[in-house]
Image (cartoon, rainbow, N blue to C red; front, top):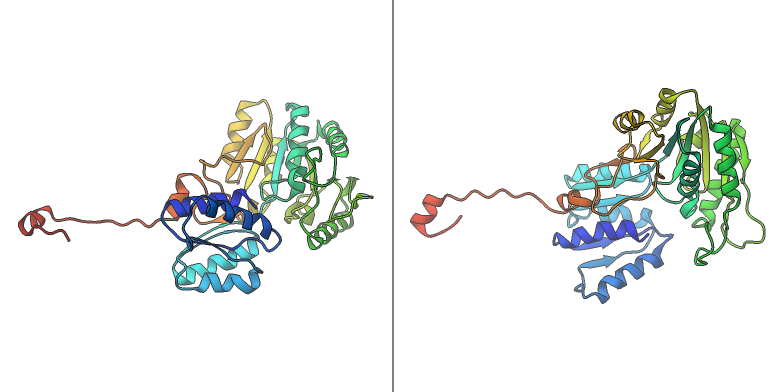
Length: 337
């Protein structure tokens, strides 16, 4: 709710545009505070405009208004595809950063403590509510049992509670509706035959929309919990016989936002970076995180249009204009055309 609007709004303003900022209807307070910061910094009235409401009521109005010349969207693949289609029909720019089902591949030569730390922080940091969250772990079968045991140990020790408490490591999901969605997926995973090894319930004694850190083992790549974005603290673990099968499982998703590999084999690292179908790749680190000066975005159903952040951000918020000046004519008439 802070980073994504900031890295969209800033280059748009630098390029000289006015901006309509329509945040998620579940996070309006963060949006209001961000706009207040711009206002107190001296941004003139009318340059940055906050519009709060449901996407169903407002989205169509924005995308179809003739004064709007570009849309930068972050959200679900379904909504992003609809927005991109509308923008294409109008002949205006659109960039859509959409869903993710991000895999971590751990090979049999990896540092398992490092991998466990990265998987737990990637899966349960921000309660799994980020597009780059680790939602799939593809583990080499030789180290799977040992690594899963370590992941369970670490996840079980996470302190759950009010996210404003500096000692808390995992807060609630954003709404009752999202909690219900996560619980529905947990039930789906159990029906599909995956093994629930930890979590799956609401923690006792905590008022609010809380779900325990949840891990499924023996998840097949075609299970819904392995293929659909849950956006909550749920990790699906799939076992692979070797590197090639692990890479196949990692690429089996319709999404392609970010990925990670844990290994000490340089050859495997560069092969993975070349063949993995994601827009961003991490090596021996979690799937989450990014640098503001570097392009951000994915492949396949995770994104369309120019990348956010970095030099491509200014490309999106500007138009290229080519000007030809006839110097001979200019000198003769003392005028430029």
